[in-house]
Length: 177
Image (cartoon, rainbow, N blue to C red; front, side, top):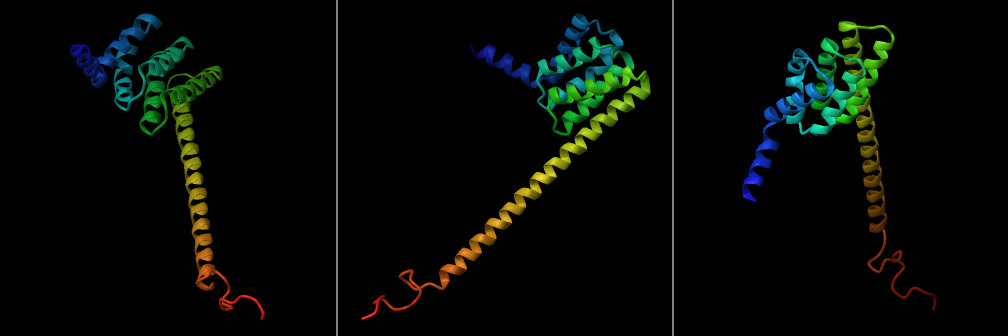
């Protein structure tokens, strides 16, 4: 029981071993070359350190490779994914964006560095849009808080003009005699 707990703990805490196993698995299942495997080792390890799921990484890389994104293009695409993950995107989201951009670029006849820069640009653009949305949300939240504070102040100042019984200070008799 305890040894299982420790080995699971070590497995979860050792992104290096996990990355090696994962890239070996990808090499076997997708047919990555040795140089492709080595070229994605570091970004895969970094994504795992960021808490990315092993299956998500595997699916994303596998999708790229099976879609014909190979060699230097695969390396740069996985690096772009890693950059997105480091900046707070989920692996699945980063994988989708990178994959779409890479396949789009490939369909337009782009290769190598041109494809890599297109993918990098798409990742950067996506991050910028995400930041912009977060900024808008923050501004809306701030505006709502400011409105609530203003309402609270107006409500409070309205309460101060009332008498102790909550009436408008016309004495306690209230009616005519």
